[in-house]
Length: 211
Image (cartoon, rainbow, N blue to C red; front, side, top):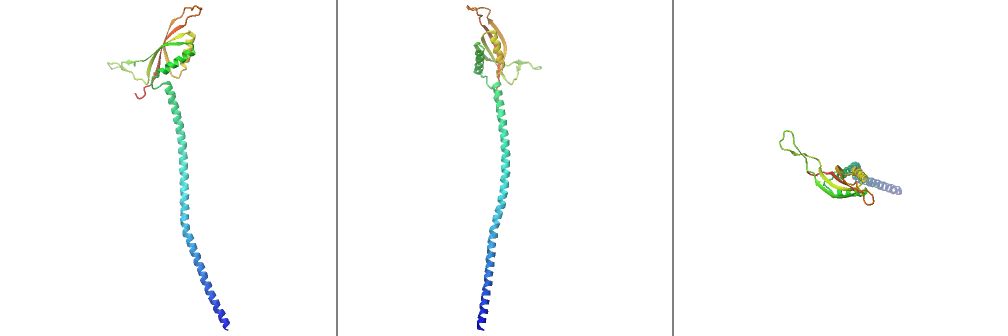
């Protein structure tokens, strides 16, 4: 009888402790879940913010790539314009560049067996015209200035023709106005004809930048 009573008490004791253990386990689970949940919330928010930032970065990258393409197009446009300006300056420089003209003439003369002498450059005066209704004449306004060139060439007529042909192909215009011919008609002691002397008057042009 006593053994049965002790066994019943022991069962009650164990059962009560099992309930307490179960309650403790449940409480532990609740605490762990709460900690995980509340620690997960900031992570979830950070993940959402990170996704937004990634999308913003993608849009920024796309915008930068578009700007890069535009810059590439602008660079190409600038290069083309620079090349055009360089060509214009070769044709119509912003200064007289008389030494360069003389060098070109000497090179062409040497190429065609001609000898150049008495090279004289000078500025051509602006033309003065009378405008109807005005008493005093005034200067005409031009987009370029003119340099008058006077020089002599010694050689044959055939060589002069080739010289003029090459002069037409020069990138900077040299506009021949008049040609006078002297000498010739006599023979040297070796029976070869004496060279001709050609007096050439020509114009070349330049622009006055900023005027």
